[in-house]
Image (tube, rainbow, N blue to C red; front, side, top):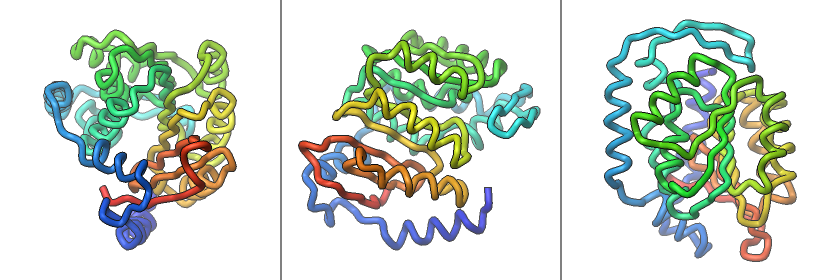
Length: 257
């Protein structure tokens, strides 16, 4: 990640970002109130308790990144603080799922299982398929899910380029997809194109780290311009896409969060 470039992106985001007082779209205004400004509840507190434990755990595990081909040894405390979804955006995921109640959820990139935990607890009737390339990360994620009494997540091991098509065959439709598995433009666009086949008017696609690099920002720019995307929301860390053609006109909003 180019820190200087990311800082430039952040300054530009801050310049463009708007609060609820500048929103003319009723749908986006309600999104701001219920998702960006939603309340904390006991289930979020339970996840934060788990995060505190992980943050103190200096056990090292070996991980393999299929996207880069690099194997590394990393502490669980580092994974919690540097790799896993940050609490601020984990809460956003939780409130988004709680508000829209998607039932068929796909996550590309499990890591240590925190992002899927936020989504799973927000709608316990949902079924989440989560893809992960590292066997060691999967072991950690499963232990974390067990500690939170989560049973509605299936983690699929293997290279995303091979496992994604198999999982999509099992899913009749995609109500929500969280793309967080490979921060390269080509791979991100490939996953997007594959998931489009199972999208419906109520689907929500969430892209993590849209300002991670120049090519990730290029991928986001291309995705939000796709003719099937009706509404694109930029909250800096996430880019969030909606497909509601009958209810929304083609728009893009940069929201302060």
